[in-house]
Length: 436
Ligand code: NAD
Image (cartoon, rainbow, N blue to C red):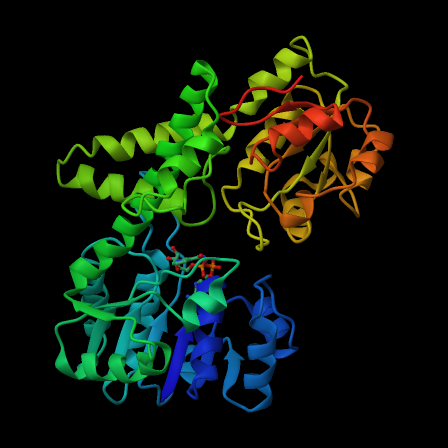
């Protein structure tokens, strides 16, 4: 099939590359000229494990190309994916300006019947709005389908190629047949393609993200209570995660969720509830707890240093909002660094993938280390903000030579308490006793 993907970010690039891999002819369109230039020079602008092999193969074989020209990009396309940003507006609702702008632009360019697919995460009713905006400028036949994306950054290629399920919202039999054909190669193991109406598909995406954010947040509150009652949240996690009704995943306590999806999607769902005069109490609590959780290490750090962080040096390991990505949108590390700087501390950071993105925000106000150990040189303490695997088994002897104090504030519970007792560190973590 001939496909167009509008918006070539984390979702668009993965969508385009993976559909090219299943034999489709894909053109990715983006307004960011620098991004398109990079892609045309085979530079992948994001870090995403495994995408490079698929990307290069499909560019080589002529199935994947990039352009800034919308008319050229959608020419003869049977399906047009919208993988555009939906950032939070001032009132928390998803801002649809990118989606509706493209919908307006598409109308005059349509020739033959086409399926326009919302892949972005969009509020209930958006498919109808997109349909209305396209119709303003054309009398050609088309359908608008809601096909929310569930991929996780860091595992995006695998998630896309072997989805747990595919959700498709449409009432058009013609669009349904086309979407079925497109996804057939990805669900050969029998994972379901679930059809529903557009509104339910839109709501499904928000419900999924809000549920996962709630699961994380619930566990963070259990962790906070564990600290007060003297229990170990890791044991609780193992104790409840083995219950198949609960499941093992998303139970790790820490300094809260971040990223480009959970915070904005929870906020947007809360706004939808408000618009419909529904008081969604659970979501309000999830947002409040996560805000608190993100910087809950700061009071501990201040207390440890007698309330004064001026002139103190902190090494920060991990900047991305989670491992295996360079994405720092809403990453807890950023807020913590900001507060440390405000308190007069010095900060040296290390992350295997996210350093360039952080440099764009903090510039010269912090230091950037080339290795995780270089970040420790003369630091008063180490802060762990992202659980990259390379932080899990460090060379503690080497660390001892570099750090001024054997002191770690671990926002991701990367180490076992016994291990910390053996190494002689003072070790603060989340939902577990402090090792002194
Ligand atoms: P992104 O910011 O990485 O990419 C969006 C791209 O759209 C950018 O490259 C931007 O230049 C481009 N763009 C903006 N206006 C354009 C226009 N008029 N024409 C062409 N291109 C244009 O965003 P993302 O992370 O890929 O997310 C896209 C959507 O998918 C969002 O709604 C998000 O909530 C949703 N989503 C994201 C993820 C994720 O893990 N990132 C997962 C599932 C769903």
